[in-house]
Image (cartoon, rainbow, N blue to C red; front, side, top):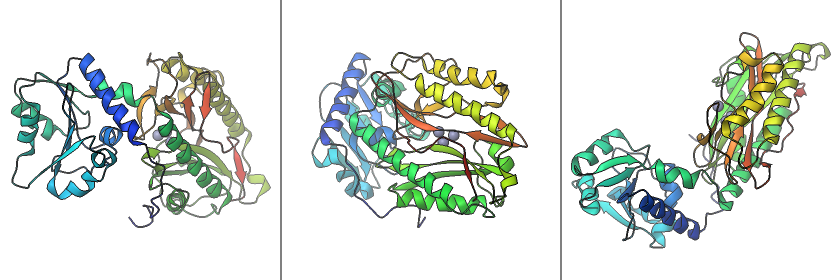
Length: 389
Ligand code: ZN
Ligand code: ZN
Ligand code: ZN
């Protein structure tokens, strides 16, 4: 993976007080919901609560948060003890670390810690093999999903999280600018995608996560995987790229048109019309963002404009997804979602129009819902970029 992971380590840090606050939030919500304990396996939930980015292993790592009293305990395999102890909450003794040896049974350890519980919540992404083991070890308990406590906490970003999302967005903006200004013609999608990953890292991401480069007819496939197809003059490229910075995701899409320096190979009038409708739809959805608006309504704002432009059947996915420690998380901007926006929610606004076999376009920004309107984190132009390539 050389070239995909950055060597720089100077990242803004989430202050300890935030973690303390989040753990208190788990307890408060857990108490309200009548839970005895909340059990959190590796993943975004664990990182959110402790600062520990635990590896996903067949050996169990799990944070046990008792709802009433007692410090949370991070059960971790012995060979992961050092990184576990180095996370900010363990270092500050906000949580205890309990390493388990190869011959110990970590599931039984959880059982001992939890005692005779009757209501436990487990993180949504905990593997079935562990959940079933826990159910056997603690037979009297009802198991529910910890998203009941984690979702209300994680869906509203605090200032530290918004600062990281902003840094990630700005880094992705710079990468898009560089790609649009660089060589495209006659290069393969895969070569451009590799270039994208390098630039995401150079601009400050610790991880380059995805680089969709959909050229020509491939631009009509929303999640196209970069191939060995060579980029030609007279076609669009949908560039959808993102990574992680300080754990937080970037995700931006811009559409570029490559002329190859040939004036006759500019965007045709049909594409310009499509793009104009798309631009209007994306702008209207962005402008409609404010507290109290239902997620499904935002999707409708964009969809109505695209339908009025005659492209209704060609907008084949939801308007957007939440973003934070996960690339896709709550809230989802999709028809039927009555969830109302609240200040601090962060999500993508990414309508697309796809004409199969021909071409397509998408515009995507990350936006935070502010107290009285949108805060758009991406700043790079949303105009169709017509470049020589
Ligand atoms: Zn996507
Ligand atoms: Zn995207
Ligand atoms: Zn997205």
